[in-house]
Amino acid sequence: MAAAAGCQAGGAMRAAVASSAPSFTVSDLNLRPARVTRRIEVEPLRVSGTHYRTIWIAESGTVRAIDQSRLPFELATIDLETLADAAQAIKTMVVRGAPLIGATAAYGMALAARSNPSDAHLAEAARTLQATRPTAINLLWALTRMRTVLAEVQPKERVDVAFREAAAICDADVERCRLIGVHGLELIRG
Image (cartoon, rainbow, N blue to C red):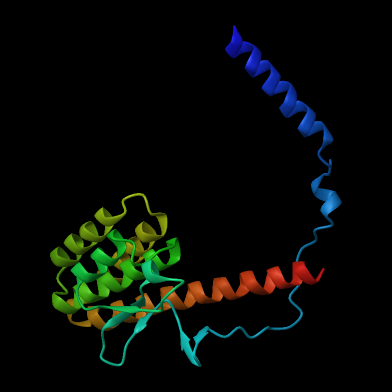
């Protein structure tokens, strides 16, 4: 009985709070479709004068990513040289965020192709990467895209194609993020 009374009192309190909250509809927000009238240049992350992406190919040819487990207190990077390195970075959340997880998976497939471009090895590589985060949508999307693209070329061409495709996935994400910023800026400016 006391529990029921408490629930009723709580319900009444919630109703009172809700009724005193400002009431508005979406049309009151005066939202309108953003129109991009000019291209706004957005630079990559800059730390101490150096520009960074979250993942890139280092001069040494390894895949390098920002170790996001150490942010925001320290900027550190990790080198991914093998499929196992990429899988471990995803599994241990050294790389975080859906787009970066997908990009890391794409580069993981490229690293796998570098070690063995056969159909069987790439199928196993995709299974390994998928097992790191089985419900990650961007990861599954990137793996599907990489498998599809690599299936269309001969094994001897797969390393170059894989690295180009992984870079294209990253470039497309950078552009999506830039457009979010452009549209957001227009909304903020009103």
